[in-house]
Image (cartoon, rainbow, N blue to C red; front, side):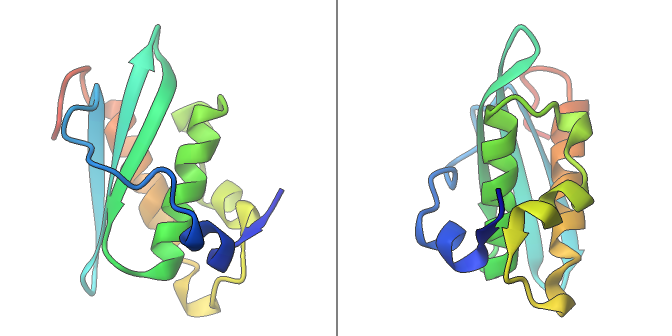
Length: 118
């Protein structure tokens, strides 16, 4: 089910510190765009996902959608930019690349050894 950028940004449930995550990773998109994703795991399954991101509404919306998908059982390796774009409506065409940035941060987090905050 697709949610709008406005809906996702108005109720950010997953924006929080990622310092104590079992795994954490980030991505830098230049132009002051940064996102960091933290994953808390139980038996290699994501049970909690949180993010920190710079203030771009589209980036925040994609990060919020990513964390919700991960907590709902989507494996980090299955979280693609296309999946994120399908989850978030109302993104300006110039900002569609923010989904790539969030997916890269998820991949970076999933690739870290448990307990890493790289």
